[in-house]
Length: 218
Image (cartoon, rainbow, N blue to C red):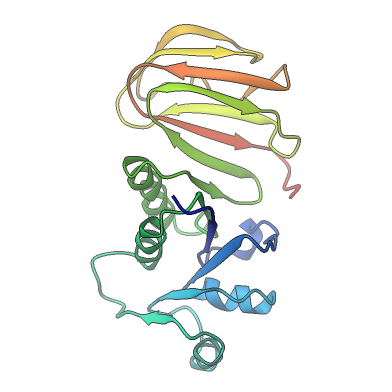
């Protein structure tokens, strides 16, 4: 696995965008309008993907002049622009992948984007979806540690596909001990850490962890 981080910016609503932190060890990839948003913040992505139907011809011209690697696709295709970018990122075998600009706006696009987390899970990739109020991740059975983050006070656990077996939460305000959480349950919504570090484990199923805050504080 390469020791690099890939950040992907899709073209979601501006009000859901967190600050796009710049770092020398991050490779940015732009998707559709996200490419133009990166250029507006003086961030030069290594690649661009999309049909670019959400920006003007003049903006697309600027994108093509600024970037050497632009993959232009027709509007009618069998995968979203974000999925095409995500598959490329998976193929680079990076240390981690963070997806921005994929929440808010159209719910079909958002739920489609969350499906990419499942694809990343199957590829054993470390993938997060981030906006200015949430961090979303998927986990397979195992034991995991989670540290307290001031910006994301709440931690919720949601079964993703079928029930989750023997869910144990330690270091949380509402602990559990080998509890079965059925698909459709809201039992584990809005939990909190009472220690600096907590632990969660389970033996079967796929678990979604959502770290969130009521305020857009990023």
